[in-house]
Image 1 (cartoon, one colour):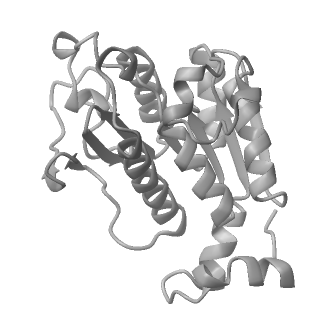
Image 2 (image 1 turned 135 degrees about the horizontal axis):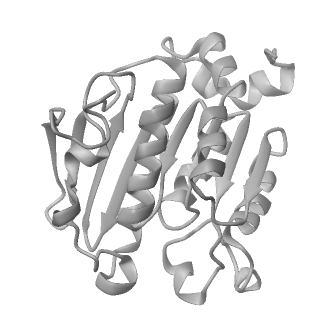
Length: 253
């Protein structure tokens, strides 16, 4: 069902609507969009908060983990010590409803198996990966390729980050073209290596922008382009990622 904006919404989103490549049509696309965000940690926090504020109509948040005191340094969606011990998706939903009570927010608080994940991905217009481990990323990539759902992938650690968009429309690479099984480093989480707090905010914000561009069909999304950040020197690089003809996930699609 197409949602038509009322006067309050026109005012709330006026700074976006005045952009010629957004306009009322683009804002209505956001209001009618459903975005699935996997992980409500350092990346998921700015992603969800900006998408909620921007007026994405339905955000589905998936995280089975609980808020810990060590999370509050960078997971800004969990705003106080009172959230410690609460499920991250539930905590995030509370924050988003306060930010924008007009949108719909669904919190998924259990770990999804492949079948349940596939159902959620099929319902989504765009999927955003905010996880911090290869097993979750590989499974999410597999499901997105199978359902041909756009995937916005991001990662941040220490003072480094990366973002890439996979269109998953039968052409182009997937996440497994970028990372192979035997290349995985099991010690790639923030708890094992550390991360500078604003770095996840930068990467998550870029992921939010890319998701909005895909929803509204504007600009030049990072489709098959790997954007790399070195925050230590504040250098950015962009690399074209080719599809792997021997990729076990996407080469047969």
